[in-house]
Image (cartoon, rainbow, N blue to C red; front, side):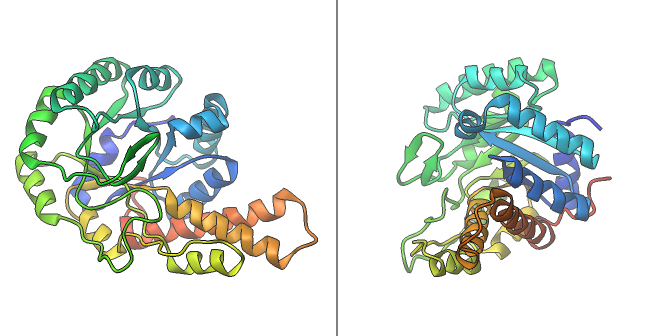
Length: 311
């Protein structure tokens, strides 16, 4: 099976009341942990690469690792650019074999965002590549763009944005936040389901995306702290809220911080318990197993996409 775009994935997810996991890839062990879990659970998956990950691991290496996963598993896999910062970056990824791209114009004015997003759509669609846009800004770090406070998506703008750009999916801001330190101590996480419901009314059947949706496992945070790390006040989005969103219009949920935290916990634990070991295959292998465990948990308990690889 070749790489696929997200069009059919999202249609099935919307109709089926589940979401597809979009897991960020930075190296081979992370990729293997993700796809091993997806293969065992027969789940479709979106493997996504940020601009900074692309700089770190390089485009060709990432692309060919993902192609190896396609050949190895036969799963429906989309290769997606996460938070594309420019038309040029999106074009480069499209020309380089990506099947889906995100253009993030959320920091621009509405009209500028429309113009930039439509430019990417007009280039992508003739090449069978799907495009994700964004309206509203999340608090936290969006690639190299610092958004300190964020702003909720205005449902009144969504219908016009989708209509004018021809975008295939839309990331909206309803209370999620990037990174592991999403909220102040004592602050209760809360998603604005009223905004999501209003968006569903205005663009029925249209796939919505949640960024900044890591749950920040307390178990892994405690392991990191136990073995010398510092992660005080790390707070994530409650999984029951994410599951509710996945049962509605949310067809794609991004997971990055949870993978980083899990891998770090596994590596710290292994190195602490095996101080004489210096073989990277040992501690990276342990990190890979932690990644796999997190992805299995997400698929089964949050996303609801186990057994959906065949439709």
